[in-house]
Every structure is written in C-alpha cells, then in structure tokens.
Length: 150
Image (cartoon, rainbow, N blue to C red):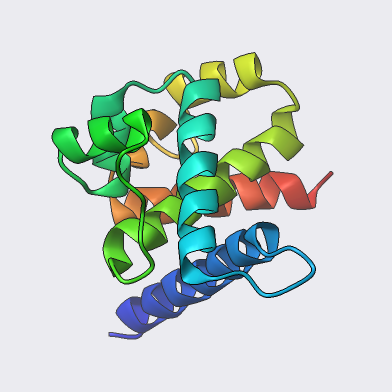
C-alpha cells in the first residue's frame, strides 16, 4: 500500500517539476498566454522528437495520442493544450527527458543511441519504456540520477 503512495507522490513531483520547467522556458519576461505556452511546448516537442529521430508513431505512443493527432502535431496544425491533461503532462515529461539526456550525454546522436540500446539497470530499451507512464518515470529517475553525478 505504501509503495503505491510513494509511486504516486514521485509521479506527482516529477510532473510538477516538468510542468514548471516547461512553463518557465515558454514564459518570456512577461506572462505568457495559454496559447503561447501551447505553441511553445508543441514546437519544443516536435523539435525534440526530430532531434532524437523519433517517428510519428513513436511520438504518438509517448504522448498518448492517436497517430493522426501526432501527424497533425508534426505538421503544425495541432497544438498540445494544457486542458488536455494527459497529453500535456506526457509532453512536459518528454521535454524534461530530452533536456536531461542533453545534459548527460551532450550530443543528439549519443542520446539516440542510448534510447535505442538495451539498458540493464532499466531492464529494457529506454525508447520502449517511455511509451508508458511508469516507464517514463523510471527512465527519468535513472537519467536524473546520472545527471546528479555530473
């Protein structure tokens, strides 16, 4: 019972941190509107996916959206919205992972290789794990621990 509570509190704290990070990045000196935040997060997600060479189907699985929604997102006709909690939170977590990987490995190609490779500590390939909520949290915790050693 306490394990579920701890997992929930970890997930909540990671989501709050990720949301705060993304909003801080999307906010210029003055307050941004929800539309500006949506445009900024959407653009950041599509750029991160591009740099990690993720296809639209993989991005759709990570964000928890349909393939057609991912296609519209990449095509620029769909914006992620804070009101759509699940996809927004996964987008923020994905951005946090991208930023953490950049800090740890320092090069997009190395991040691509790391995501695709088997990881004994995670008991799987990170790219497969980040397609679920639990896997995303596990991978983030792992990368954050590595980041903390730097």
